[in-house]
Structure formats: C-alpha cells, structure tokens
Length: 309
Picture 1 (tube, rainbow, N blue to C red):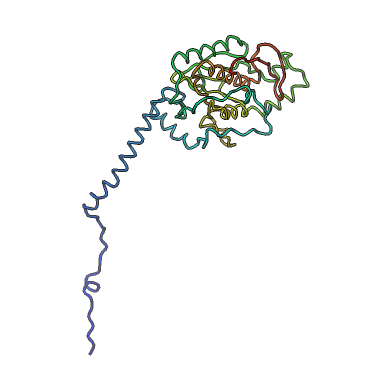
Picture 2 (cartoon, one colour):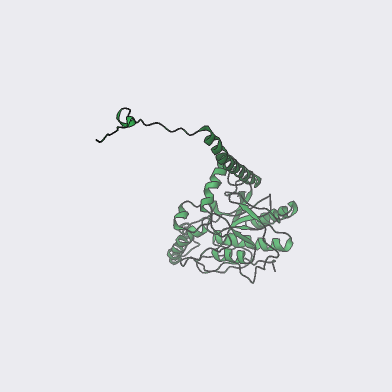
C-alpha cells in the first residue's frame, strides 16, 4: 500500500512574491563606498576650478559657465603642442620668414604652460618692466606702419591690447584701385582662396601680449610654427586641430601659437622678429621699411629686420 503526501505549502497555501528589502546594515556599509569617491571627485573639480580662475582674465569668462566650456573644449585639444602643423600642398608660399639661420636657439628649458582659454605661462614670467618694454615696441611697430597695422582690444583675449592688420582689400577692390593688373587677378584669387582657411584670424588680429606673464599669442605660417617650436620659442595652442570638420568649429587659427615671454633684450629682439613674421602671414605683406620684393604666392613688401643675432 502506497501512501502519498501533498505539500501543504503548494496545495493548500500557494506561494506569493515578496519585494526584497536590503537590510539597513548593507545600506550603511554602501554609503561610505559611494561617499568617499564623490568627495574626492568634488575636491578635484574644486581644485581644477580654482586653477582655472588663477589663470586670470581671458577669452573665456572666469565663471562656472566658462569653466564648463573649458571642460568641454578639453575633449578637442591636440595631443602634442610641440608637433608642428602639416604643410598643405596647395599652400603658398611654401616657406615662411623664419629659419634656423635668423632665429637662434632659445637658451634653457621651456617654461611650464597651463590652460586653454586663457592659456598662460606659469614659470619664467616676464617682470612688469619687460612687459612694458614689449608693449612699447609693439606700439612702435604699429606707428611705423600706420597703413598696415593698428592697435585695438584683442579679439581673442578681450582683455588685452592686440595688434591688427588693416589690409583687408579683396583682389577685385585692389584691381579697381589700380594696384593689380587684370592678368594677376585670377591667379591671386585662386591663391588667396586656397590660403584663406590657413591665414584666417579674428578680425585680422596679428598678436596680443598677456600682462600677467609677458607671453604672446600670434598666428604664423606653418613653416614658421615649425621653426619656432624647434628653436624653443613657443608651442602650439591646444585648440589648433587640423581635422577637416574642426574648421567649422574652430575658435583659433591653425597656426595659432604661444610665444614665451622674453627674459632680456636679446630675446625681446627675437620675439619682435616673430611678431613681424606673424604680421606678414596674416596680411600677406611684409612691413614696409626699404625696398619692395615679391614672394611666391602673394605680393609682399620687404622689411629689413635687425637684431636677434
């Protein structure tokens, strides 16, 4: 005789689903695990924000909103600011004004540089007297070339004085004025159209200096950027990407570089030479001093540069 038993749990009392509630002990153990990294993250953000404020005024407002903008821009910075930009096949002229023969090697180690906008030199800063001398020399350069240059508030920095190129005539306007022959217009138009995205700068700004450290930002021919980096005088701005899509979002030109603050009179002469090279590249003309001479790809006016030997 076989006797079968039926489970009372399944037959008479069907099981019901219950929501699981973790014990309070588990919650209290989990809180420190989440709280410690959160506090550490907030501390890092606060420290980074204070470092951003310490850079001083610049193109980006010194506000939480400005800081968030910088955090976003960090996603698009170049990997190596000491890697020269490429030299496009269509770019004319192929060479700049600077080379190893007329720009000596900068002595000593490079300064420490931080930031994006603003970008500042943290060590080897110029003293106030050197900055005033640099500003005076830039003003002299403008006064000596009133038809080509003028001073104004920097379009990039918005807080410091910049030097701008006033030569903005198109080839058609130049032809109407009688400065170009008809047969030169088509070739010059093609050359300038090819070079536009490489020469483009904010309202024709050539350079601006930073009162806080004595460094400068300016735009150079790609070959001159290479020379400046190799000779130790500066480095590329973090946002000078060369991706084709970046040209639609670009905030600074491809050849935008930081030039380190001059430490003495000889270095000041070299920095002024670099500024003249920037004026030539932005305007397509060398600053007038003595004689006229053409360069391949764009009409330029030759300036004899002294110093920096």
